[in-house]
Length: 102
Length: 400
Image 1 (cartoon, one colour):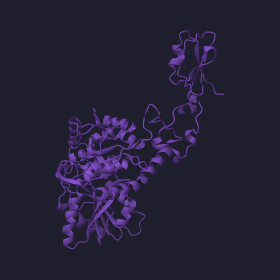
Image 2: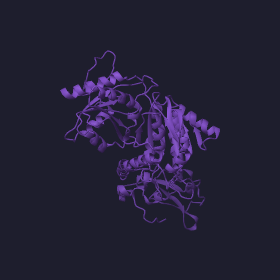
Image 3: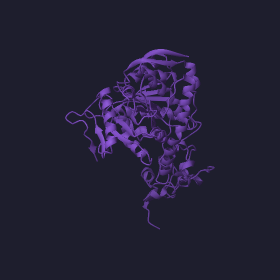
Image 4: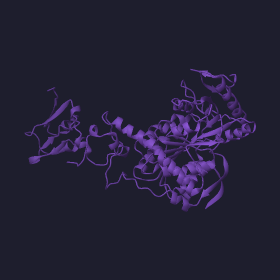
């Protein structure tokens, strides 16, 4: 999604803030990369995945989306590493691995 | 065309809210505010007022409910006092931060403990920094007028702030006296319907109450601070329009017999009229004293104050609340601060009294004027003088 004129909070001067700091355009959270809070990242093993979509359904951050051939992919810019997808997966296709400093 | 009626001040507020044709009222009864929601509930039940009346389970819920109604663009009203205001305080800050034009009447009452249902201004002073526009009333006519004016100011597109209308509990809220009620036609012309641009609507999704990380919080708060200060222009415009429509003129800081006065006594709320009676008496005795009524508490009228005290030697300020461990009466210390950079400034003499419903009679006002002039003459390093404390010698000054 591309929004015209969207600015990140740290680019907005005080006199350009919407009345009451209300977000007047929907979907702005997708522009703010919040994945760096994560301490663990999910890994989906396509060899095991049955494409049931439970991980997509349960992700509290809408960070999982369906891609080619019906498999699922994690948007690591928004995934917080909560592990719900790994816990809910009925075939244990998702594993959580610790984030390591690059 | 106006109609002369006799009403209790609480009912005058309810009448103003009805004539403002509010859409939503959410309130929890608390003495001495009870007559306002009671009368409004009656009006809604009788079909006199077409509004949603939400009987909530607490003041926190009352404010939360009107936050919701204001978010969809409904004209919204609530009312409380003392402990109720304390309980709702968290949500009170949200109203001004979200810039919702809610109107709230506060029937000023002492904060517990000990439990007191009677008037002082400790509740108003507790909520000093909530970011609302705040005014005080002296009589029933003003209780009506300020309540109506409040909607006009709050909803102006160049303001968009909630407004708190303070009226003294019991000594004003429960007083019955004559007042003029304007015609509905005049009210409608003064207060048109308003459209909230950012209203929550399915076809226009907006997010209210977002998260503010350190990279934006300061800017949001500064924008709010500037906007509240700028609201003063419309505050005055709305009073001008009020005078043009209804014939009664109000202003931020009102003087009574201030011409050539070397001494002024400043009050907030219903004690103003007692002070004016004493000013009349003192003037007859040849004392050059006048009265200032501080109507607009927020945004504070700095320029008006500086103008009003030109040539004045003594400014006596009566506060109806302690600022425990602080610099004196809350209003007096703000006034001292406001005048600090004025070269020819009066000596500000701070009195604290009339707490928890304690009467302050004309004799005490006379004492304040005499004592204030004496202090100004002799000079003192005191912070304030408490009034009428049993066991404390009159004239005892509290020092820092």
